Length: 131
Image 1 (cartoon, rainbow, N blue to C red):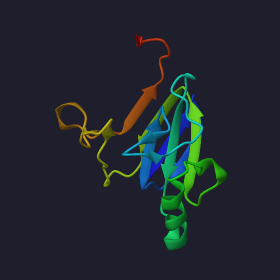
Image 2: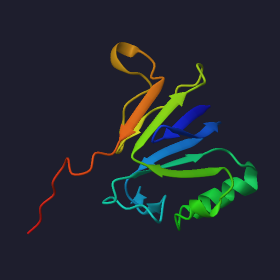
Image 3: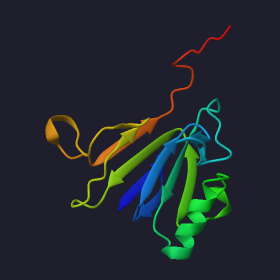
C-alpha cells in the first residue's frame, strides 16, 4: 500500500502493483505510459497501477500500447504535477526502486528502509544544446 500526493494535495492511497513517475511518453522499448506527457512542460506524471482482476489486468496491459490510461483503464490512476511524494504504508513489503533503469534497492542510506520518496521537477536546471 502507498499514499501519494501531487503538489502537496493527496491523490491516491491504496494497494499498488506498479508505480511510475514519468517526464516523457515512452520507455522500455516503446511502451507508452502517458500519451499526453511532455518533457518540456515543467510537470511529471504519476501513474499508479493496482491489480484489477484478470479482465482489468488485460485492459491495463493493452493500454500500454496507446498510453491512454487517462481514459479510465481499470486499476489505473494518473496524475500530473511538479512535486510528487510517495509514502510506503506496508512495513512488510518493500518494493525495489528503479531510477531510469538502475535498481536502487529497497533501502536508503546505511540499510534503512525507504518510507518516503519525493520527486520534484526543476525546469531549466539542465540545459540541452544541439547543432
